[in-house]
Image (cartoon, rainbow over all chains, first blue to last red; front, side, top):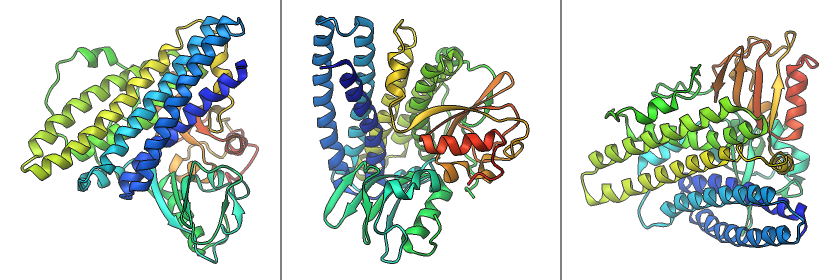
Length: 193
Length: 220
């Protein structure tokens, strides 16, 4: 494995683990077992990535393509991501138990600095038929889409090429005033992004 | 915008010296704080602390690293308090089952803050800039911005400018004169010559930077 590939893998672990924490909190707030199960699947994926990464980095060192110091840094960074992913799984685990979440939990999540929101895209919304890259929701509304449901299919951590269609359900994270803006856009109440 | 938050909290306050060592060895006193407030603060810290840890590395800044250590110790205390409060709140088996879930989330938040503590240890290691190179490739990154004297941002609050909802940039910390403000709230003002550490995309950075440099009158 080439040096830069190890760097890409470690970045994937970092980004995915942060996404998992957001997904785990969302699953609790919206009482959603499907999202919680996805966190479990992602955790398995991260474990696999982490193992491959350790092996490949060590091999690169033995072939003198990577310095010991750099290999250690890469492995430690990946380990941090792996631990965050574990923590996300523990959070999601609470949702998967057959116990109704404590009312305090929802209140607490809603009072947090960053809010999680869920919106359904209506037929006459400006969001319909556009990709996330075209819409630039992140820099225009402050809301980052962390997951979405398109018909019966779920999509986690959508990218710039992901297209939004009518009746999609978006799960997003961001500031309180961004939530209202996204709601109104999705409902077709305003057309200016 | 934003509802008033009356709860006791340390984030967003100005602290000249993070006394994490003092906090670590101080005797743990029992403070009756509602479970809800404890959990909210733990979640907020767990979200901030990872970004702070990466900021410390990228900016080679020991003071930010100190703040990470302080928050890590603070988190231990919160985790202890929430256990006590949860035990006192349980009156039935059903209560206990639900509260066990809350404690599990608190434990996970504490684990995240410990990980942030591990991340800042990477600063000590004498490595080539492999870490900044990796972090530079991420879609959302940490940026450092400066507010010039003729920027329209001067003497405005973060909330009134709607910085996050207009640019997607989340302010993690502000350096003013010789002290830091961590996790500023919507009521915090921006002042000329502030150094702002924020997380976001390239696009959001360009937009906010032009505004902070006084090159654009409007943030949009």
